[in-house]
View 1 (tube, rainbow, N blue to C red):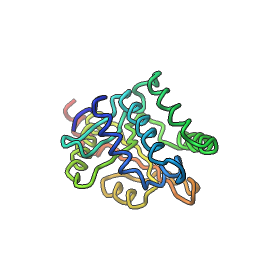
View 2 (view 1 turned 120 degrees about the vertical axis):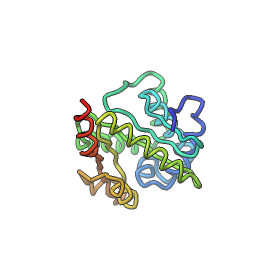
View 3 (view 1 turned 60 degrees about the vertical axis):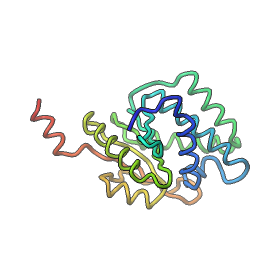
View 4 (view 1 turned 90 degrees about the vertical axis):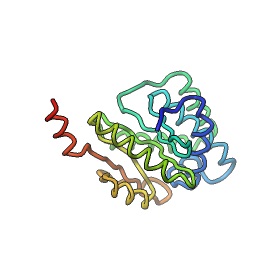
Amino acid sequence: MTFASIKDKKDLINIITETFDANPSVNILIGIKGNRRKRLELMAKYAFIKALNRDGAFISENKKGIALFYRSNYGKSNLKEIFYEIRFALSLPIKKVFQALKREAYLKKHRYQGTHFYFWFFGVQKGGVAAGFELKNALYQLSDQEQLPIILETSVERNKIAYERYGFKAYHQWNDYGDGHTLWFMKRDVPEGFLKGKQDVC
């Protein structure tokens, strides 16, 4: 796994657009009508620039997997990020913009408030299973080294089950997320043994 740079922008946008095309959370935001591909690409560009601005854009060695994963207390919005956010917002129907703002307010209110790593996007292209494990292992190691939990939200039940298998626990559930979907707020704590090991070294 390596830090992504602006030269990886095309690869990251393609992976996000491809892997999140059927994601309920994405469809609630961008809708199912009109030029969805364009809105998906604009969303992916904004997400990439925001994560890049926070040193949180990662790509696997084989370029088949990406992760947008950054510290909650690191980096602030800059003009480039705001530009991409506005471009994306302007691609949405005005009704969707207000719905998105309302949902974001709920997310901020109920999301874990302590310092953490926020796991925003994780996408792996077909045939890139190894890339998925490479990214997961590297990001977990980063979380353990920094002694910070990892926070994410998912509206896909099979993803929730998979995250639970890898150490996450749901700490809040929103049953009225939109279009009849449930959103799970999930947290992976730093393993207890790792913390003890760090204390022994000190």
